[in-house]
Length: 146
Image (cartoon, rainbow, N blue to C red; front, side, top):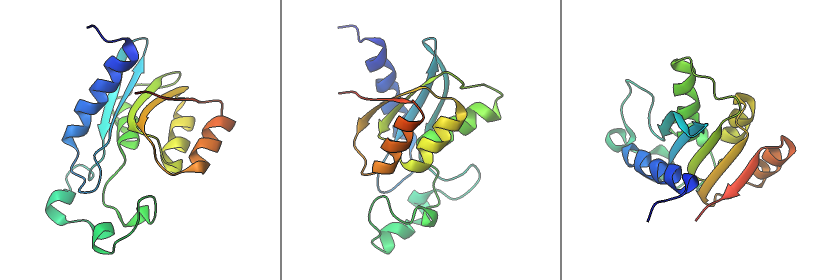
């Protein structure tokens, strides 16, 4: 059966997340405009640095719960990496749609808003009410997809 566009791009985000080097949770993101992929990203360490799978995870070591003390993580979120990749290659994401395998956190929500992303499809839930509120205030449509 042929998937609709939303499921098609979400499946691509699922594939992108397979590149993640995070020890806790793998996340993938795909930015799309006019049914064309602009950029992809997965959560992991910055280019040229040691991967979490090799260096270990400080948040895991100190038993820090999900959603807390993000500054101790050496990785960058999938949404951030996708937005940065677009910028690095000179691609505007203004007016685009983001497909991500996990609901964005507040930091990623703010980046998506300021990058001009207008719609976000996500799969998994993430406990961040402020992200939901900010996306709503900015008029970014947030849609959960199965």
